[in-house]
Each structure stands twice: as C-alpha cells, then as structure tokens.
Image 1: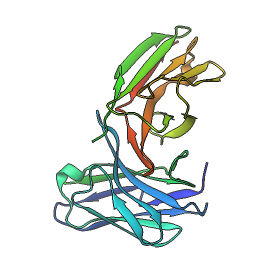
Image 2: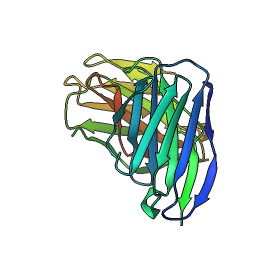
Image 3: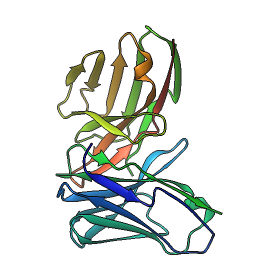
Image 4: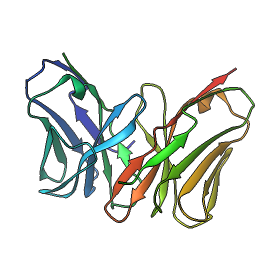
Amino acid sequence: DAGITQSPRHKVTETGTPVTLRCHQTENHRYMYWYRQDPGHGLRLIHYSYGVKDTDKGEVSDGYSVSRSKTEDFLLTLESATSSQTSVYFCAISERGDNEQFFGPGTRLTVL
Amino acid sequence: GQQVMQIPQYQHVQEGEDFTTYCNSSTTLSNIQWYKQRPGGHPVFLIQLVKSGEVKKQKRLTFQFGEAKKNSSLHITATQTTDVGTYFCAGLEGNTGKLIFGQGTTLQVKP
C-alpha cells in the first residue's frame, strides 16, 4: 500500500463543533483528494489539491474547507459539523491528475 | 455536470458463475478507472482504460471501454469467494484530475 495515513480513524462529535481531518502521505505525490462515501452514492469528491496552496472544489464542497501548506499534508475542516456530514471520509493521492489514485484507510465521522 | 451511472447495485452469484457490472457516462470520458473495495476496506485501483474500444484482461477479470468512450464494463469469469466486494468505475473529467465515481456494484459470492 502507498504511504497514506489518515487521522483520526474514528471520531464522534456534536452538531455545531469544528472538526479537522488530516491526511498525510510519504509518496511526494502532487495531487491529493478528499472524498466522502455514503451508501448508495459511491465516492463523492469534496475538494482536491494539485499542489501546495493550490486547491479546488469538488461536487460536494459546501460546508467543507481544505488547506495544503506542505506537500505531504492535506487537511479537511468542517467549520460547524452537521448530522448530514456523518460519513466515511477517504483521502487519496495521485502522481498526476490523470492516473491511478491511492486511497488512505478512511475516517469514520459521526455527528450527533 | 458529468454523471456516471453503474448497474446493478447488488449482485449475488453462486461461486463459479460469471459476473458483469456496467458503467455509463453522460459525457465522453478521457479515461475510465476501476477500483475494488473489500468490506470495511478502502478502494484499491484495478485498472485504467484510455483508448476507444480498449479491452484489458487481468486473470479472470476482463475490462472493456466502449467505442464512444461513454461506457465500460467489468466481467469476472468463474467467480470465487475472494471476488467479494464493491466494484467502482470512475470516469476522469477532462484534464482536471477529478474522478467521478459510479455508485458501485456490490458482489456477494455464495460458496
């Protein structure tokens, strides 16, 4: 497996609280992605990054922000968590924008 | 926006039977990728198809990309219990690097 870690792996939080998920890679890949996975929806792209400080929105970006200050780290922040953001979040990396993506182990987030 | 539809959503087969999942896009794709996710695991890349009409094989798995680059299929011959999981197709949106995933097909194999 590619060197991708996500933290935390599990989190339970309350509505209205801020939450930050971290993705760390040791592969020096340029592209990093955040997805959420919900039953019946497959994987949906939240935000992605194509370089340090270079980010763009995906198809479900509302309520989420990201930051990438170093090649190896990509942070996903929920400014004020809502129950609809209960999901499994996956980080992924790729060397270029058009080739295979390697996924991290995922973070299960529950918003009560 | 671009949509990728995948059918069926679920498939139960007897071990040894064949299995096929289909993927259709609303727009022409730059390439299509296939991933497998085991229960409780993360998606793992299987293959990428780029050319119109392309066919690739990996042991018992056969992947096809349609002539119009808007559809694709994954066929597994003689399924085994190790094939259990959810198979996702994902179409690349232009040159943005954004992958649009299908909803996935969950395969159950009865021994």
